[in-house]
Image (cartoon, rainbow, N blue to C red; front, top):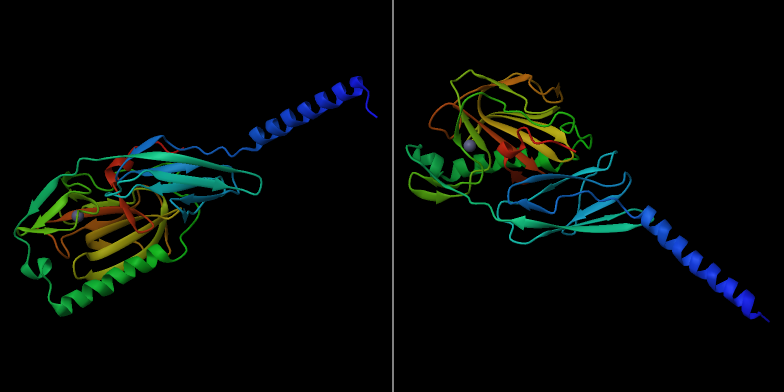
Length: 281
Ligand SMILES: [Zn+2]
């Protein structure tokens, strides 16, 4: 039978054990690093303890060996993003508040009629071209976060002639929002890789995009260059930030020579301009 003294000692021992378990849980709790809020069209880089798994609004995300992962905030997202992390000992969750972005409207006139209202044969060609892009975004991307060390730079020096996300009105007809950044430059101007990566697709003579180059920067982040005059690298080449990978052209649906630079996370396009000079964690 326990004396009152030993009962007291026993209770102290129990409360110490509870405190110790709490302390251990706090120590083991996942360190999920993310911003409190982000704008529609943002690319967010988060970090969690290596070896964890990550879900964004229920969808699993790629994660690097150092615990980095990428969250895209879609252009038209109306709700907040719920990020959940789990490893074998612990879980964590974080809500990123979605802030509305003021999108503009851009009118483009003087486009060839079949580029705005393609016929059946042209629509089939467009679909074939689109499948090539889709296949690259779907195939297991490089998990190595090649873009993290140096971030992104502008691929071409020139006037910005079209921004990401603007509502497009082509020859007077409303069309899908612009999925990238347009930089006007003379034909033949060198286009440089905005970040380290691996050339994943070189496609010539596509109907709307002309000559195309796609670069995989890791963690599901890809760049696409379209309307190119020529491509200077081959599929599978490792490319460095600043390396000349193509020449600006006027191929596909365009009214003048320019580089269209798109950045996607998986199949979600984000604003390339906001990435330029963005500090990576
Ligand atoms: Zn464009």
